[in-house]
Image (cartoon, rainbow, N blue to C red; front, top):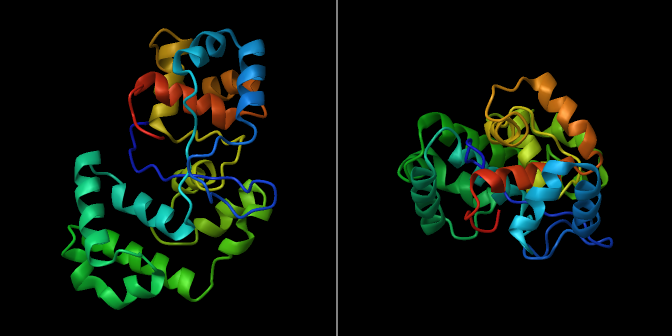
Length: 229
């Protein structure tokens, strides 16, 4: 995965079902996207076959996805996994109401910083009070979902874009704030030279409307043995 490491998980609404009921399912657009990317982009034509049948795999629950993203922000994967494991131990179902019931003291006891504790509680409050419309996100366009998510403390545009990729399985997300994407473009398209956002946009123009898929393969090129991302 990319350098931020607070990756969420994703899933698109398949044939009218709600997002990510089957986290192992291949996104319905994946085969078509691979074929088109390989036809029009020489780097993708070399890169995609290296990963066989691997594909983007989703995380089914919106609240859990966002909570996991917050826990993982600005820490190593090992530290994030440890804190997440402790949180699940005291709150196995991870429902918003249960998070609120736990309160700041118990959340902090899971290894969360004061700020992350506040973020998790604010996220839970948004879900419990229905100030976000998770049941409608699968029908909303990308920017509308992002606009709603960034109203929650601790949810940046990058985190919202990861949610689009890993929970809603949106096919055309380009997370320009993601270091892994920029590094992947640098290594694969510019021989390791520094890459600007403008450079990234120019390269990605050739990926439309499958920028999520191209991004995923660039992540894999940096971290090929990462599980189920």
